[in-house]
Length: 225
Image 1 (cartoon, rainbow, N blue to C red):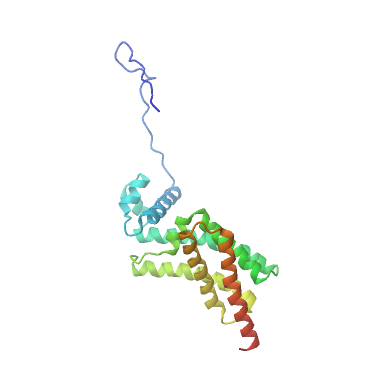
Image 2: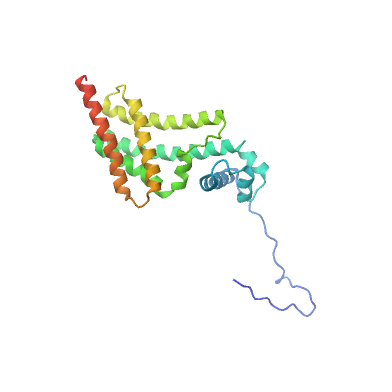
């Protein structure tokens, strides 16, 4: 939009009305600033990749200096880890919904259908975020890579608790929890590469892959095979 300029007063001086007010920088709370930094970093990691994103890039996008970023996070690895932590926290919070179905006596098919709907709804809502979460960079230091693996294991432990409701606490819980997590991750990658596939179809694949294998294995365990 082009602003029409008013002629200067006869004296050649700007009046108080004409004098532009100085712009004031809005101060954020520490929590709000940290969230802003994470949001920006997450977007940059998704669009540029971890290796191609620098602390300077994050600071520039946030309109702050590098020391401000470092006052919240000690390194780029720490920022990535926190992005993964908050994304997994959201996923694990939503996992409570299938747990309610389990407590109500729902079947494996019903529970896994709902679990698939939750996961792929989240993926559909913000695919770039989940690509960051499920494509960890090999450039992470061993310390942070180990912490990232710990976050993933925590999610898998939650899934194993769900499986235990059907298996009665058999030894299959943990390996099937890893399988369930892997099916979701790999189907998610495939769906992102093939966005024309209807979400209902992807959810059905997720449900059938898991329930078919789990039901067969449970039957074999109970028959002693």
